[in-house]
Image 1: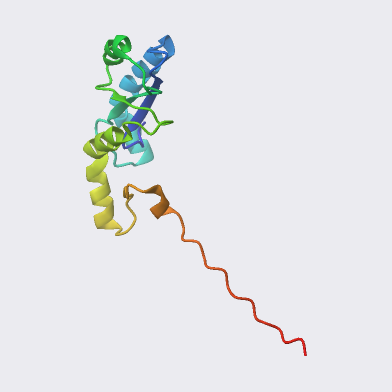
Image 2 (image 1 turned 120 degrees about the vertical axis):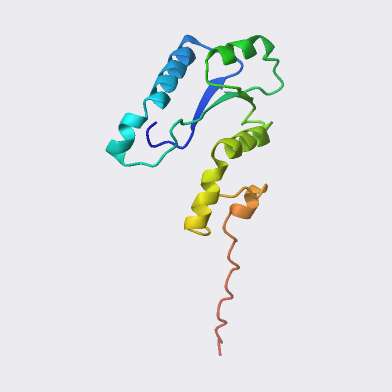
Length: 142
């Protein structure tokens, strides 16, 4: 936690908040608040308060209304409700990440141009271009 820029805390939206989730949330709240004592040890320059982003995953076509209040009771902020498998509401997660740590991307880009992550909106654009097959030299069989 002392070296983190942000914490993504993922829970199962179909199960709701479990006792394990509550325990982890407590550990994260305490750990994020006590990260200062480790910063000097690790010599990191992370934010004073590490943002915790609660993600309620597996929310594809599910009504999670009864569990929503439980999410708030974890005390880690507003949940991002999404389905990674169905690629539903992932833009909400991107927006939240940009809100919480987007300023870090801008700083990194200023220090080391071309090294910060960018969202192209199309994962195919990030893949290496396929190399065109080279033509084989023709051999004369005279």
